[in-house]
Amino acid sequence: MTHTYKLIGMTCGSCEAKVKSSLLMLPNVTEVAVSKDHQTATISMDKHIALSTFQNALDKKYAITASEHNETAEQAKNWLATYKPILLIFGYITTIAIIAATHQNTFHWMQAMNIFMAGFFLTFSFFKMLDLKGFAESYSMYDIVAMKIKPWGFVYAFIELALGIAYATNFQPLVTNIVTLVVMSISIIGVLQSVFNKRKIQCACLGAVFNLPMSTVTIIEDALMIAMSAVMLYQIV
Image 1 (cartoon, helix red, strand yellow):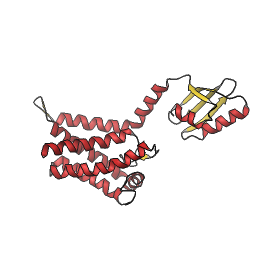
Image 2 (tube, helix red, strand yellow):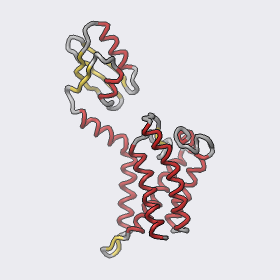
Image 3 (tube, rainbow, N blue to C red):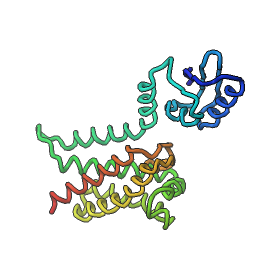
Image 4 (cartoon, rainbow, N blue to C red):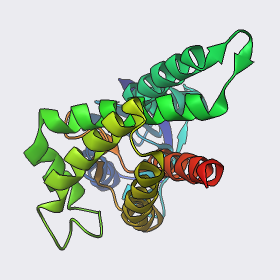
């Protein structure tokens, strides 16, 4: 995609060269054309880049603003495109859980959560298994256990698979939910640290198949599993 921005502060050819060089250094930027006469910058990129990213790459004397497109709408489109895989997965699993847990106009919350957890762990473990080594390497970049014990990434994928089967077969609900609560609570610590420290790393939730960035979406995903397992434990106990 290509967008033309208003860019004020350029006064000479040297400014043009400096701005162009700074913008070209950004990831996903493929081409840049700047004009001090028109005070514009036309930027081609592989995917939409936030305006703040451009501004941070430039010297403070330059100010860049969107002039020919709606920045909010573009960011929303980019967000949806980035997280489309995980949104579709959650949509499918939620739909199946709702349908399966509805009997004679009565909705069974516990059954719905059990089915959702089974679908979640089976689906996410499947994507991890497609490239187990790639997942383990990505996971070790932020998980507090995998950082110190490299084989944990390999083990974690099989734990998710086992939990998916356990929820699907209703095997030892008390033990299954305790394991889920403990494992996901440990997992979310590394996610929180990465997001709060604004580390730009790949999220390994869907293995190495999809290039999903670590974000609040990952926090919500883990927190949802923790909350559901806690609720189910409360109901059992």
